[in-house]
Amino acid sequence: KNTKKILLLPGDGIGPEVFGPVRDILEHLVTSGHVRLEWEEGLIGGIATDRTGLPLPPDTIEKADRCDAVLLGAVGGPKYDALPYEKRPERALLGIREHLGAFANLRPARLFPELAGSSTLKPEIISDLDLMVVRELTGGIYFGKPRGIVTDQGVRRGINTETYTEPEIARIMRVAFDLARTRRKKVTSVDKANVLESSVLWREVAVSVHKEYPDVELSHMYVDNAAMQLVRNPKQFDVLVTGNLFGDILSDEAAQLTGSIGMLASASIGGKTGLYEPIHGSAPDIAGKDIANPLAMILSLALLFRYSLQREDLAGVLEQSVQNVLKEGYRTTDIQGAGTKKIVGTREMGSLVFHELKKVLEN
Ligand code: NAD
Ligand code: IPM
Ligand code: MN
Image 1 (cartoon, helix red, strand yellow):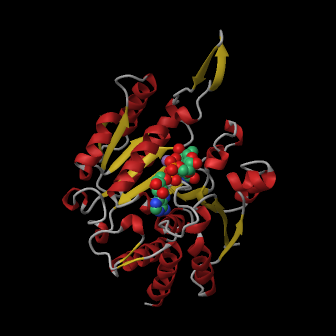
Image 2 (cartoon, rainbow, N blue to C red):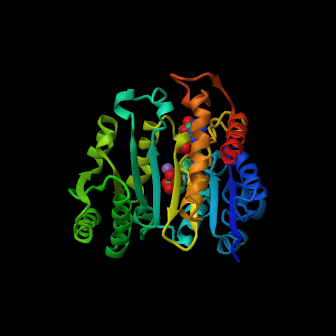
Image 3 (cartoon, rainbow, N blue to C red):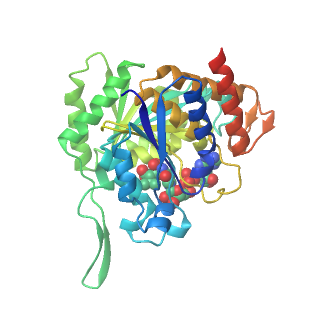
């Protein structure tokens, strides 16, 4: 059977809003005969807790298991912040990543030239920016044990553990080196090896896996310096590979180089089913206002076509459609700047991309 199946998980806050154009796009791609695809919808995050009592219901896991890829909006919100860790929406996100074995999180920070005037950084610093953050996603301090809040001798203590095994480091390094081979052949491994043993091992394994990739250049950088270098001279980077927590932080920083966090898509691969999501969250401060930028969501669908369905052609069509809309000067508020002709809301931006997609497909 060659009909592919994908699971849609809009989630909370702006998740369902930025998901708007996704169904129209899928519907059109199917009816126009460009792809054989079915999709179903599921619950994750706060909305899943509201409806079922659990942030990651078994039904969602079962659906994910029978799909070829999962597309996710965002989870979380103030309403759920007081819940214990196991019931939090964020826990569901970690749970599905872990369940799918999606250990390699690719976060491509590429600047659309149209947005060179939209970043808070000077255009010359970011023009032609094309860096790939490879974030380890199912290990590190997010998952390390022991964890929890304990009381010893009347004093409460919060505990988390940063831990990486050699195989965990080796497999994420291979993803980074393989990607670098398709790009500018430069890997920067980011760690805190001057302080943390987990990073000492990280660096050792990076060096040893690098021996399989003599054609790729490897350098190492401490995470504090990397944070600074990202805003000083981001174009020095090609592939940046790092652990779960450092990657989370540095990729939000990298997103701003491309104009807005609302522009950055991600692909979580390495397991049997890929997971695709924008890197931003549920943005409670703007949820329900029809102003969120849906482009990171749409670009995540492009990554799904690229990495899970092996449809580079359709990934390209989606990316081209986004670029054409930007070229015409349409902007959501987060990416306004030089070149803006019209500020549009979430829905309008979504339908602009959808209509552009139809045109691109016809040509
Ligand atoms: P956030 O990414 O939701 O928002 C950070 C800032 O960026 C906010 O000012 C927001 O308005 C803005 N922003 C985010 N996405 C945008 C978009 N598409 N268009 C325009 N502006 C956008 O991060 P936060 O505020 O730290 O977290 C809010 C909630 O989201 C929390 O519950 C957090 O745990 C959760 N979260 C979820 C994910 C995810 O589901 N993958 C990621 C990050 C945070
Ligand atoms: C992200 C988010 C998540 C993370 C949170 C919500 C668990 O910040 O996808 O970047 O830290 O991985
Ligand atoms: Mn994050």
